[in-house]
Image (cartoon, rainbow, N blue to C red; front, top):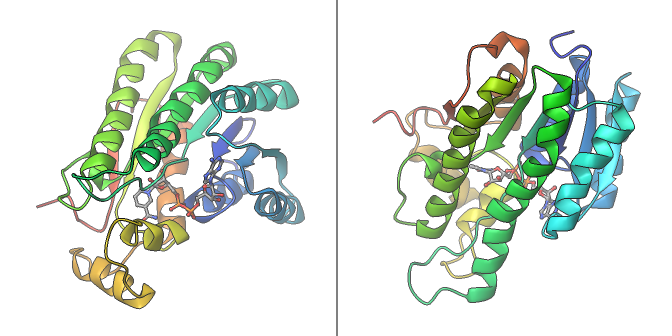
Length: 258
Ligand SMILES: NC(=O)c1ccc[n+]([C@@H]2O[C@H](COP(=O)([O-])OP(=O)(O)OC[C@H]3O[C@@H](n4cnc5c(N)ncnc54)[C@H](O)[C@@H]3O)[C@@H](O)[C@H]2O)c1
């Protein structure tokens, strides 16, 4: 119940899927959570669910493609809570599936959401985490940030970038008592799983087929649940992981084990 008691933090892309599961789980463990997403009604729904359960949450509606907004949300959360102990940069985008004939607009959007926004929010959060002491960054990469995927060269590049960024921060900020880790999900049952498989430049498949193919490609023969990633995130954010930094933890049913 109290694994995050006294802590305050921010989760991006918290209006749905793993981010939402994390926001509700972190709040249930005593954290005050800034729920950040560009989908206003989704933010309101998550905040209402947290408050109904007796938790504390702050709604932050922002399009994080804008680096000014991406920086602002970290400052808003710190100001509202009077401190910032953790920031889970969960936002990401599938980007293009192709390696040739890449749509330049889609590439820009993916770079903005997977890298620029993540870097901007982190940059703004660093002084707040430093001031709080004992801070923790968490990033969401993917199995595509650990191994290559022939279906996702651009996504693999960006998610390897997220892992590299998190590890470099672990080194840079260890002296400030700030940890920096990554969760690397396999296929997880969220809207993004289907969007990822059905990127506009790839052949479109029915939702059931996407799920079945993803499950068949996973040693545990199923896709993951958002709560299974949120549980790993909770551990890495909490003081239970006090000697863990620079780690990239697969939550993938064994996908990267082989
Ligand atoms: N679902 C998977 O199978 C899977 C696997 C590996 C990694 N990931 C990673 O997980 C993250 C996505 O999480 P999810 O699967 O929980 O997704 P999701 O589809 O459930 O939620 C994504 C959220 O991001 C928000 N969002 C989109 N664009 C935004 C913007 N410009 N500004 C602010 N918010 C924005 C959406 O409104 C939505 O609430 C990404 O980093 C993705 O790369 C997902």
